[in-house]
Length: 124
Length: 189
Image (cartoon, rainbow over all chains, first blue to last red):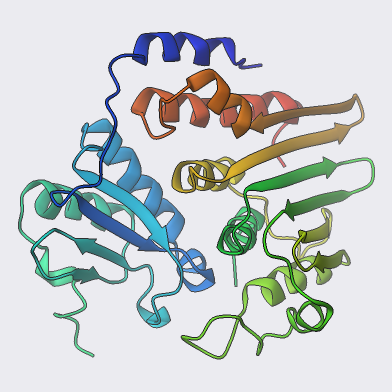
């Protein structure tokens, strides 16, 4: 069985390194819809992919990955919204883990929204 | 419809967090000798009055205002009852809500448990203001085995280090996976 001893070792290693995170005006918010509609259409792997990658790439001081309830567009779930300070909100629809990884690379790191996945470019 | 029991758990616990719960107890108990899998979610959120509890399994009832349907609880109830199992929700205004669903494992209509570790991990990482006590147990021919993840314990050890610090979240993920493998013993369900 994995024990809590290991966690103590991690804590000892981390202490002092972790600064207080402040959500200031340079923080980007990434929101995944996690109501029944989102979960049923596959939002869980989208959320875990995004939060894993943000952690792996040490972006937690710039990007917060969080979740919300029903956005009201259930037929387009899984939905990911990207809110960058000073920029209009970008809504991505019909996400999956691969598309989410692409958005992290090209939009959140590269700075260019991936137009082909956006709600705005969907043929409604 | 959900394809895994673990997705139902995620959905139902989201209700707890939306009801302002500070502590949510989640139990998954597999009992091979009784051919059952029982999920319990017990929270200290806002709770509901009797009239609300009576209506909550009705798909055309929801507390939300964006639409007129709420399928989370009715789906979960249906998924359990179609296997020959049971579903029960009890609540008290100002105290909390308890949901219990029992699935019959051998039923052909029983959906798989699925990635329960991913569900618990997602909840712990995304609701760092809420505490979770998750217990997974399995009873087989060789007896009962179980493990618990209690975020209050983790918090105490970690001091101010957040759960989404890469090393910490990797630890939580491994803790959930390795301990479940050990509890399952004779193979996953």
